Structure formats: C-alpha cells, structure tokens
Length: 249
Image (cartoon, rainbow, N blue to C red):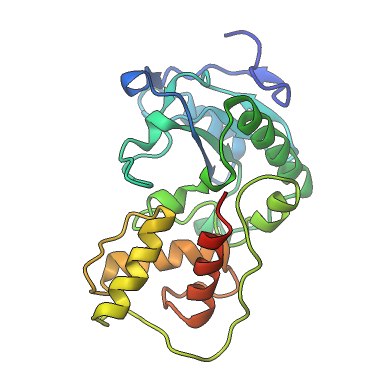
C-alpha cells in the first residue's frame, strides 16, 4: 500500500503488525485510543516495531497530520483483550485510530483543536466508506474497561457528535437520588447491569456490584458523563444510560 486509503492521511508508514481478519470479517466498529506515550515519534516507532506486536490503522499527530500504518481490510493489533456487544475479537471487527497524547500517566493534557479536527475528518471518512453506525464508534476503555482508560474523560465526544460522529445524548446533570456502588447486591443492580449489557458493555448480569461492574460504570462515565468519573452509578449515570439506549440508531 503506497497511497493512504483515507484522503485525510498524508502518507503511509507501513507497520508489519497485522494479519487477516477472522473469518473474513469486515470492520463495523471504530476504536479511538490515545498513545499514552510522551512523544508521538516514539509512539510511531512502537506501532511499527515487530517486537512490540502492537499497531493501529492510523496515527493522528498533535498538529493534525495523519499517517496510515495498516490497510483497513487487515486486522491491526490495537484493542487487545476486550469485548463489545458479544464480540470478543474486537480487533477483527474494528479499525483502530491512535491519537498522540501522553494520557493519564502524562497528566492527560487537552487534545489540540487541529488534532480533533483531523480525528473528526478521518473518523467520518472511515465510517462513511464502511457504513459504520454512530453507536459503534467507541473508546478503548469502552471495550476494555478493566484495563484501559483511553482516550480519557477529556476527549471531546460531544464535539465529535456535533460534527456527525458517534452516538451521544446530553448527560443528565449531577444531583441527588438513589445510587449503586461496589458491594451492593440485588435485583436493582441486576437491572442496571442488564442496561449496560444492552448497550454493549461486557458486564456480568448477576446482581452483584463487583469490581467489573465498577469498571464498566467508570468507562461509561468517561465517555458519556465525564463531569465525574467515580464508578458510582448515581441517578445522573443511570438516566444518561437510559437516554442513550432510547436514542440508539
């Protein structure tokens, strides 16, 4: 591949880290990541290093430049262990976009405007060409909530939605009311877990608010209710989840 498949990319820097998608799957999901490294150049080298065994289809630099690393039809190695809506081989059904940002370990600096505009253009182009639904444009933390936090609570999902990218509803304001947290048990917790599972999150529906459920709640908050990320299913979190399910495409 000598020419980028997306017109938003300026060059191809081929990574050897890819293989065929399982059973001829075609991508129906886009996953957004941050690189979690202090320097974008170092991230590029790692994504192209055969020893690292990690890659993505695209890398978006802070200044808005986009490089393609892996052909879109191929299975890049960006998601690792994760699941969404019953699919456990996320790499086989997704296109991965790495966004240069040092992440939580580096203080989670804001994403520059030029970078976000490039992400919007790239994601919109990919979603249009592959007919990917808005609610299947997700963050790494959505599919791997117990392992990952990227792209983080400062990533402007609402801004993407205003540009026609992704699924979003206005978060319900913080307030009082009943809440559920780690250690709670019973039918109301089971009903809450069933709502998260219905949206796509990989969560046990067992009526026990354990560590996995807390991780899923935190991932949901990072994406859809970023004002407070604490893993507590308060009324704002639950109502926002309900509204997302109701507004699903």
